[in-house]
Amino acid sequence: MRLYNTLTHKIEDFIPNSQENVKMYTCGPTVYHYAHIGNLRTYIAEDILEKTLRYIGYNVTRAMNITDVGHLTSDSDSGNDKMVDSAIREHKTVLDIADFYTKAFFDDCEKLNIKKPDIVSKATDNIDMYINIIEKLLMKGFAYQSNGNVYFDITKLDDYYKLTNHKIDDLVVGVREGVEEDTGKKNQGDFVLWFTKSKFQDQELKWESPFGTGYPGWHIECSGISIKYLGENLDIHCGGVDNIFPHHTNEIAQSESYLGHKWCNYWFHVEHLNLKDAKMSKSTGNIVTVSTLIEKGYNPLSYRLMCLMSHYKKILEFTYDGLDAAENTYKKLINKISSIQEEGDFQDAAYKDYNEKFMVELSNDLNTANALTVMYDLLKDASLNGKTKLELLRSFDKVLGLNLIKEKKETIIHPQHDEIVSLIEARNKFKQERNYSEADSIRAELLKKGIELIDTREGTIYKIKD
Ligand code: AMP
Ligand code: ZN
Image 1 (cartoon, protein in one colour):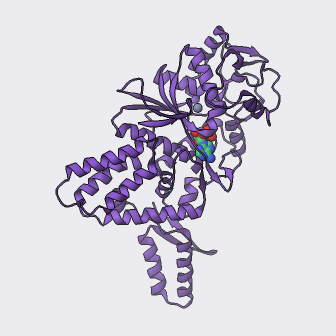
Image 2 (tube, helix red, strand yellow):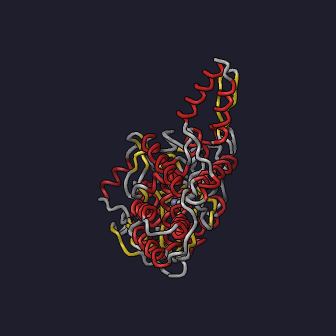
Image 3 (cartoon, protein in one colour):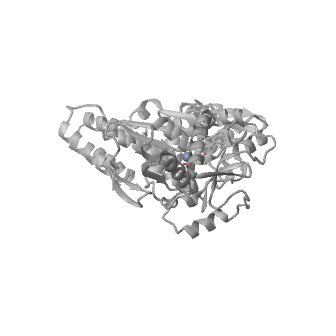
């Protein structure tokens, strides 16, 4: 397996600490809003990584946090707590907000066939661990208390910026932009481990600690949860590219200073999904969610396929035209597979050969586009019988997660929004002409495809049936 490693800035052979068990950590969602399909692009790529590792024979233990405290509106410790802002906006408690959006996140993951990590832990469930790390960092002289908060002193490390491959000065300027001066910091780049000086008088979530009543910074959550559940030596840490700095840079600083040795060998980062030249972002409201796609009549797995058609290290531009093309490709693929009869004797050598080709592509820094080409090659291969083809597709789908086989029997592919609207218009016309049998047959046809029409005073609306 070869993977691009952000830490070394090159593609490398992946060699885990133990062949028996790969330890993988994923930065989880900040649960103050629905995940957008950009966030989910990252989780799809991480899902492919985990499944590829399992496919090529590794055991994987994967952990993920749920950020329900401490993530401020700027990643550099300024602004408001995103959870608190959301609770105020929705007139709910922070815990209600967290529960609601955590459930929504896993529902979306399920629709995209993203496997739930083995260990999922809420930031608020591990406060003791953060306190323990911070105490040790203070004791070792890596952290200091000032103005009520506890900060990490980045000048104590020679290689603080090792993950970013940027000149120190460039990043310091980047951090300064748009960030109001924090007079408690000794150095502009220092970051908060524990807040007691909250901007919010009504900050709901606070804990007693040796440094005062307060709450943890965002970065310490991932170090704490990862070390607590996966131990002192991590194989792979994942996230979107925006996490490289400051979040992952800070995670490395505090984890390695606490442990006294190297912590994680491979850093896996997924490029962003952009919307109309801008980053898709929960905080700017520039978002499309899985529900948006479903409401527009798309199958969420078409979006998964769209992600797999491009490389995770390339920026992906989201357009509905692009999604239409992916949905078309997906429908054709499923139709083609559904016409394959499970017949003939299993062709062992050919099976191994195709499986090998598929693994070679994925092992090459997750080349999912080429892995899909292997799948298309096997579909076209006249020397393969139906039985072997279907076995291969079943096997590939363990990684691709496109419901290649199940789709043909169980899942209805809904017509798209525009198509439904024009059928509703045709039905209205028939009704005006009192041609009720034609009107009814349109209703029945749509129902067969999972679309229910509801006539209201304002006109006909439609609902996608579960
Ligand atoms: P958050 O919920 O904001 O903490 O982000 C969850 C995950 O989504 C993180 O790994 C981010 O790096 C990633 N992410 C955020 N925005 C995008 C985007 N536009 N495209 C892809 N991944 C993203
Ligand atoms: Zn994290």
